[in-house]
Length: 170
Ligand code: K1U
Ligand code: ZN
Image (cartoon, rainbow, N blue to C red; front, side, top):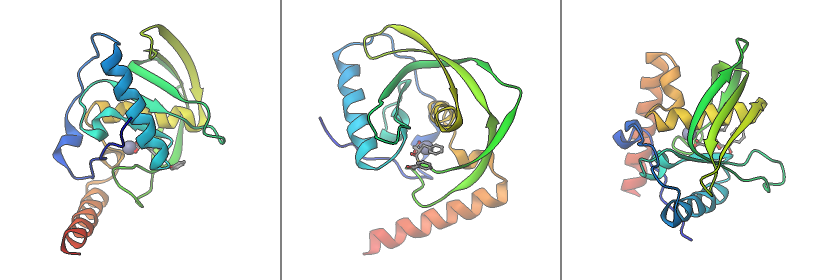
């Protein structure tokens, strides 16, 4: 297993659209294992392959308190969502320390393949629904700040660029 580097906003690679996985094989399972290791080490509740510069439709999630309920979603699709929408404060491992409110459907049904390539469906609400939608956005090349106003996004971009310049200078 290996810890992977997480791309930091505004890296243009975060805006690539991920390709479907054509075969769930050992190569994909190795990516999944590395993604879980990276997500747990970064103390995140989710991670999309896009964030580690792998442009394939793979997501890992664990929103449990004990951090013992890993969920793998390969080629995920939202097959149903509630009309009711809810506002949540979101964060992102590609924008450490930046949080803002995003409104999304409150509950969803997702169809995906698991790590053995078996199809399954889950109903999600609360943090799990927010997290899966946030990660699916990453696979489309969208970051949560793309849901914010142009003004907020440009301020966040400037803050991230300043932080990156300071890190490079140190
Ligand atoms: O995509 C990512 O970078 C992971 C992201 C998932 C996420 C969390 C909360 C709302 C939407 C999406 C994170 O894990 S952010 C960091 C974090 O650990 C966290 C933030 C808020 C609540 C719980 C955890
Ligand atoms: Zn994110």
